[in-house]
Length: 141
Image (cartoon, rainbow, N blue to C red; front, top):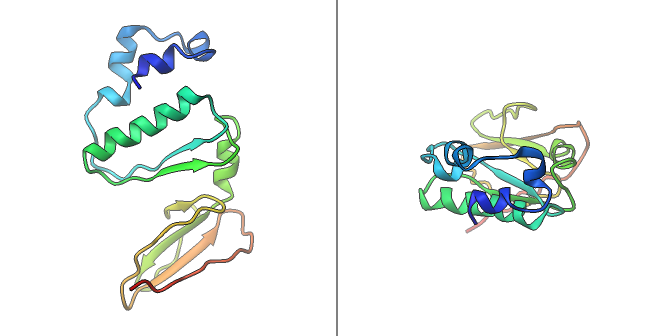
């Protein structure tokens, strides 16, 4: 999918009114890939063109071998996704690890993630809302 397909989807360009020049200059699909971790979250309740845009951008970054997860958030859209993400858990690993409620990587609510913890390291997790939950740690061989 190209940015023009998203722009031409129903309702989107009615609001943003992107020109071809703006698409060329602003589209992340047409910019150099930056080698920094980037999680791309999208709501499964979005317009199909918006979901495809998120998936395409993740695939584009994957071709550049840069880190980042594609995170579908069930039953959300661009109005509700941030509320759902705020319900997640932040984590960190390391010796004497203490997760920060603002600076550690985020696992969205009910998201399953494999996190590598080396021998001698700890895994620390904290809920964004201070809600009690379950952190399951399984040793993989």
